[in-house]
Image: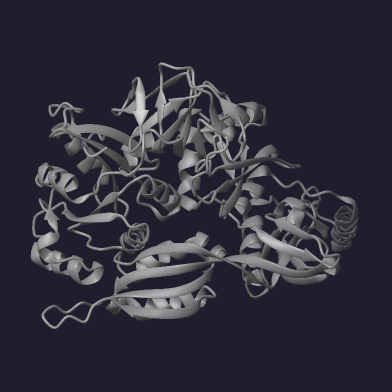
Length: 597
């Protein structure tokens, strides 16, 4: 264990974690330096390679100067902060990476705070110093002032050229402490990740804190939190592919091929032991979906393909929740829970690319808690689940604590944005007051409804700050909210598939947008059509689709005008009867335009 080091690389999204990891792999002989440098070895998904971001954490074991270095490459986007916390819990140290062109970001501050709270040794690195026209000295001072390191501690590096990579590996060996634990003690292995392998069953990625797992003896292992037992089929290390070994000991990171088909048994944060009486490790809180949307196949005949595809994806993604739903218009689909908007986008693109699915996706929503007058509490995500107003005692919606890291010059517009998004101001933190270096960065702290965050808040924030502001948020709980169900009426009949939930003060504005969309997509009929938005029995918005005109007098020629008047009167009475008894044909395009608006 004295020659083992376990560490993560933590940073904001797109600051160069995976590229720097590739240089480590080249130095330790796990990647051929002649290979394409733009191909990031630890980003296994095609989507990761294309977008240039890490979506899923990836461990790798390296040998360097007589030491074993276990690296866990982590995502940087706020949606995947849960994956970062799992990585940190399996390590004794972390490389804190800051992009020299972008500087410190909100996610950088948040993740550094987590690492410090866990007692990890942090090595500061300023990356991408090869970019021309970068003021390196200024970035070093920012790094030092905002996060609190001495300037001479900061390593200058370039993931692209490899500069500084060797110095970082040497610092890892010298500064990060060796893991603690006892190989002779009862086994305590923390599951920090799991995924499904077609031939080996569920693969559990583990950090051994105490004890050891041997392949030479047929061990019976126990999952301490859910009480299930299994016998490992294979054990090994990530190099970065699965490499079989005979033994994994305390302090090491490896994998256990379980042979089990149900990934739900291997909950992230559970403890594996060789004795059911062993004390489990603290583990993690399970991830909770924050954003919900319903996925329908464009062709109803593809429902079973969508079902199989989501089942396979959920096997490797514990944060994705799936429940079946049915729409009278769009057929059968699945209500899915996501960690955030990027997580939703990633799942959508993986379904479309890897499984060749054509999808219809509803607008994202959040989960409300509705307390009924009989004391029962319902979790409501859609308007169809919303109870009658007379049954409701209280409605609560999820809120988040938001930290916006921004240059001070953009403070005013961003505060206005937060206020307009129903935000509650908490604090403004001025990150430095150095005499020899003017620091104009601040940290705005607000509490905001999650629904405001998942609409267009991020885009507006980037626009108002010229792209400089960055955002980090964490759940803060539920607060009472004035949420109403807005019913959409077409020809005075409610269309449940188009109804939606909204705050009372914003319901009218959204209803008008929905009606405008419907007016453009519902074709004209032989009679006038009224489309309305209503809360209970009160109409809050209305649009009219005029009747399609037919010239009933075209066949007449000459004669008295009373002949035309007679035909016009007959046409008017016919349209009146049609309006009373005729049905309105609402095309699928109308539903799609509303669902995706």
